[in-house]
Image (tube, rainbow, N blue to C red):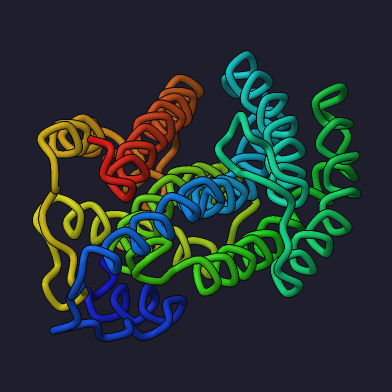
Length: 312
């Protein structure tokens, strides 16, 4: 089942505030231009785009951790799953603290001063603590079913919570001086692609392992559809959302790489959805390809981040 374009449009628009119209407003003096330049430099130093990318990463990690736990628990691609799980746990810790306290090495300058955003981050830290403990337990003992269930139970909840944090950051940091809303949308769509690679890995693992149900299969189909629409939007543009085709040659080339092995991945996913038996090698190949796809999409996010600052 392929998600209709209109559904994707609705899902994107639902987290973005309506664009403020600045048509016809131009600087009328050299002084105005200097002020705008100084404001822009201040905002870039605060790291508006960097904060969005960091929040996007938390959303991706909220799915990468359950996916790695599932493959590790079922003894598939153990080496890669173990490596990804260990790195994902550490990255979640580092990223959530960077958003709260600031991290100049990541371009996030100064602690979070906006009350609503800081509160969201603090609530996320509280929710993360038991998941952190359970994920570490699985890393040490993949057979610990109780710890596995804690992580499984967190998948939807943490996706919602990180999504809500991202929405708050987007709302607070998106304006024509800090970060153009059109650029925010590009960051949002590319970030969703990264998250969905790991959501597909997690949902597919639950299905082929026999732990899924009809609802989970529908969720996997929906995720596949959203991924495909997102790829088309970034590659070919989506005028109804104000998304133009890839704005730089480097981004266009990266999108080609991201799409290059999608047909192979989709073939594996269709096998999962059909209920046909998958060999251990095919399960491992699917996980590996989605892990590689994740890294390619994260590189794409970095390119869009640079583009948002016009450093390309």
